[in-house]
Image 1: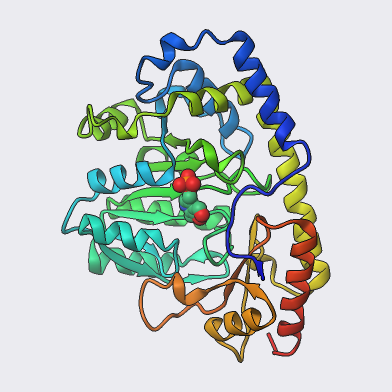
Image 2: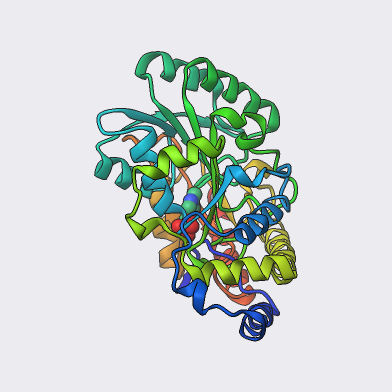
Amino acid sequence: MIDLRRITSPKVPGADDYLRRTLLSLASRWDGADEMRQHRRLGSTDDLIAAQKFLARGNRGRIPIDRLFLANGTWNVLLILLETLVGRGNSIAVEASTYSQVRDAAQILGIGLVPILLDADGLIPEAFDKACHVHRPRLLYCVPNAQNPTACTIPAGRRAQLAEIARRHDVVILEDDPQGLVREDFPPGFSDIAPDISWTVMGLSKCFFVGTRIAYVVAPDKAAIEQVMSRFGAMAMWYASVPSAAIATRAILEGAADDLLQAIRLEATWRRDLLAKLIPGISPSCVGALHVWLKSDVLSGDELVERARMEGTLVRSGSEFSVEKPNQLDGIRVSLADVSRQSLEEGLARLARIMGTVPV
Ligand SMILES: Cc1ncc(COP(=O)(O)O)c(C=O)c1O
């Protein structure tokens, strides 16, 4: 079986060396015992400078460090933000097809979901506006770059429209941006264009190493950070892990993370080029950074998953991500990232055979 389900940073040449370089540097120049005896809470000044530097590798401007903090991975901080900014009994607007853990989180926290329909450019502004009128969500959770699962990216003009609607309805925007650094051509994020109402969470899982469990968070301002985090005060589960933060910070400040990111970008481009060669004609809006969305006019996502499985390839069906039944965005999500180049080529060739036998 070739498993094209998991999206993570692809294995790239030199990855072990980039990590080793950072670990050797830490071993030779870090008097870490005192730091290891302390909590890191929101991150040290060096962590925040590193976060600022790394985030600027995308198309975000230079974000002031007092708007930044570190968390233990995306879900750690999403649960905190949803609990604090929304609260039990209220609702959030989400993409109609979205990262499946959002549904689990909403259920745990007693928060309602208001699905907003997507087109090729992502969230449809008119649908968001109408949902705000009718359901009064407190917050919009979205993945504007390489959306999960549909891989679409919201263009700059539409981001401005959505931000204007959110502001008019007093809705906070929470953008989850795990693939934001993997391509260089993503538009500026909501934290740049509407800083006063937006939070951004960028986990390092796709652009560095999932094993760090570090996520960078951009808040509207320093006061907002303290207000949200003070509720969780001494519950140290959200304090950044010291060794993980030290590795990420050292790798960024000394350049190894830049080298790794560059290698990840090249690898992702190579893999998207392979996709274009093996399955030509996919709309660019269905090609994300590390995954792609494939759809057929005659077979449902579930049927495509089954056909792929019979051919020895595992992919995810759109129905797994649908917030509502019936599923309105049907297709399959195919990761380009997690397997070797050779397995990817074989897996995509199998999918090409299936897609070639069904009109798209
Ligand atoms: C949209 C989205 N957010 C967050 C994550 C996970 O991030 P982390 O590893 O930081 O928890 C993923 C991983 O698949 C994702 O697709």
